[in-house]
Amino acid sequence: MTLLHESCLYRLWAALVSVWRDSRLCALLEAAEDWCGRQIMDSRVLRPLCREGAVARSWESSALCRLLSFLVNLPGWLLHKLYSLFPVTFSESIFARLAFQMGEETAIAQSWLIMLLWIIPFTYWNNAYSLMGFAVLLVLFYAGSMRRPDFRLDMGSVGFYPVVLFGAMFLAVLCSYAPSLSMRFLVYHISAALCVLVTVSAVRDSEDLKRLAAGGGVCVLVSSLYGVYQRIQGVEVNASYVDLKVNAGMPGRVESFFDNPNTFAEVLLLLLPLVAALVICSRHPLSKLAACGVLALGVAASGMTYSRASWVGTAFAMAVLVFLWKPRLIPLCIVACCLAVPFLPETIWNRILTIGNPADTSTASRIPLYEAALEVIRTSPISGAGLGTAATQAYISDFNLYHGEAPFVHAHNFYLEVWIEAGLLGIVGFVGGMLWNIKNAARMVRHCGDSAARTITCAAAAALCGAMVCGLADYLWNYPRVMCIFWFVFAVALAGTKLCRREMIDNAG
Image (cartoon, rainbow, N blue to C red; front, side, top):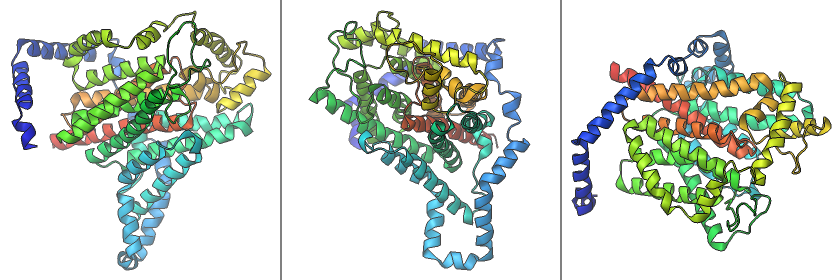
C-alpha cells in the first residue's frame, strides 16, 4: 500500500486529478450537469416519468400490502412467539444460537449461494437448484426472525407492480391453453419471487450489497475464463447461430457453460455493471485491481459471444451507469468510445455492421416470430396463451399462427413474449415494475451522497435498462437461470434504493 502511494505513477495520477479538478473544462462539465439535471426535473415531458405515481406511493399503506406482509411474516411471528415461551431453553442451545446467527446473516449466505449456483455447468444444472437454494435462504431468514421481532420480510419495498406481475403468473397458469405445460414454468417464477423477497429483506448495509455484487462478479470471472479457454481451444462455427454468408470469416461463438452464446452474453449484460460498480467503490487497491481485471475479462468474453442485442444492451447499460453516477463524464466516455472503434477486431466490427441488415437470416427470421406473437395478442389479448414457452408453442402450432422456416421457440422480444405468456395484466406488471424500479433508483441516487450503496444502485438500475434494450430483440427469460439472475439484479436495485433512502434520512437527522 505504501509502495503504491509512493510510486511515480500514483503521484502522476494524483497530479492529473488535481489539475483536472481545477480546470475550466471540469467546471464547465459540472455546470452542464446541473443544467441538464434542472431540465430533466422541470421538463413537462420527463417530469411525469420521473415522479413516483400515486399507486406506487400508496402501496406500503395499502390493505393488500399489509395482508401480504402478514402472510409472509406469519411463520417468523409464530417462531418468535415460540421463542418467547422458552427463551432460556433457546439461549442455552448451541444449535439454536447458531441458527439465529446464520439467519441474521442471510445476505452473506446468499452471496455464497449465487457464487455456487451460477457457475454450475449446463450439463449438471437443474432448475430446481434455484428453488431449493432460495427456499433454504427463506428458512434461514425465518430462523433469524425467531429471536428478533424486527427481522421481518419487507413486502413494502418489493413494490406494487412486481406483485401484480407475479400474481399474473399464477393467473396465466389457470387460464393457460395447456395448463400442464405451464405448471413447471410457474416454479421458475416462484424461485424468482423468493429471490426478490429474500434479497430486499436480508440486505442491511452497503457491505451486504457489495458482497452480493461480488457474488455476481465471481460468476463473471469463472464463466469468462472458461469462455476465453473455449476461444483458445477453438469453437466450431454453428450455422444455427450465425448467417455464414453475411458473417463470412467470423469465428465460432463462445457460450462458456451456458449452452448458448446469447444466454452467456445476457448473463454478462446483467452482471458486468455490478462489476463496474465494484471497481468504483472498492476501497483497497488490490480489490480495485481485481475488479478491473474481472471487468476487462468479462468485456472480452462478451465480445467473443458475438451477440449483437447484448452488445447494444451492454453499451446502453454502461452509458446509463455513467449518467446516473457521474453525468459530467459522459462527454469523456463518448470520446473514449470513438477512439476505441479503430481498435475493435475486424470480426466484431463486421458483426456490428450486420445489425438491422435484412439480408441476415437471424434478423429476417424475427419477422414471422413477431407476426405470430402479434396474432396471439390479437386473438387472446387479455389472458395470452399461457405461462411458459411450451404453452405458447402449443397454442401457435395448433392455430397455425407461425409461418417461418426455423421452429418457433419464443417471440425473440421480451415484451411480446411476456404478453403472450402472462396476458395484459402480466405485461402491465412487467413494464410498470421495471419503470418503477429504475425511476426510484434514479431519483434516489440523484439526491443521495456518494457511497457504495449509491454506486451499486446505479449499476443495478443501469443493468435493467440494458436488459430492456436487449429485450427488444431477444427474450432474456428463455433460460430459467438467466431469469433468476435478472430478478437478482432487480432486487439489488430495490435493496440499494432502500439503503440510499435510509442514508438520506440519517444524514438529514
